[in-house]
Length: 305
Image (cartoon, rainbow, N blue to C red; front, side, top):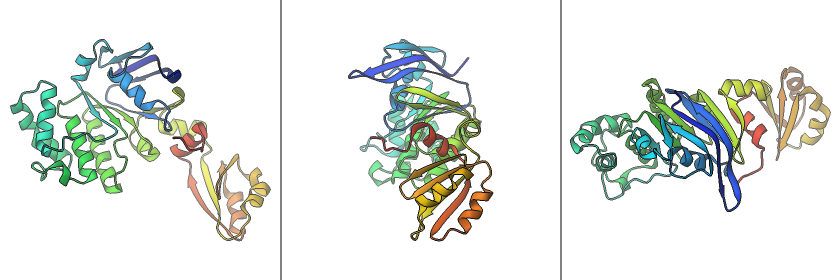
């Protein structure tokens, strides 16, 4: 049985369909990614899966329960890390966990017994009595993760869990999420960090305008949708990048330009690299293709509001 499955979900706001026939399934103990640009329908999809928003059509099963009809029962075994921290500033770190446990009907004694373990897991063992206002942004984010685990959930939803964090905090949260998956938890992740999805997700879908446009493991999507090598060329000192692109685009499978940068997507970059080495005023970076390249190809380079 899938930990989470959605079939032909649809939801509209003000006449605009923001989730348009979306279907997917998540196996237990896996990390599933939901990727898309701003406004693609990611957060609405999470709300539909949690029973916080009712679909206009379609079906959701969460932990064996029908959503939204049995959403309350399903959420008893679910943890949620929201996009924005909503910790209670009037309570200490440990009090936030204690009060949240009451929402699940947990006995105070049981929650108190779990609090040291939860705080240690979040790297906050010394912050039990700290007020929320004294915590850094990274500490608040880690406390929000600890709070999502207070009911020992089977499934954890994480809506952009590392946005705004420094690299050290991001890596700590990645480590903790890997530990959760190793413990058999199912993770449902939305993120704008493609390296995060590439590190954590077993499978993922890319959505745009509420529709699924790609599905698979990170490695599968890279292999299926993008050339294996990328050369980025920059006009550093009057090197006439447009002329270079026109003269050498035949050396790449595909070329994209964005501002002062040209992206050459290649199967064999050696001929192109040889020409760039002789091109005055141009600087270049050669790298392997990644999930961000796939994402940009599928959803475009234009800004989304």
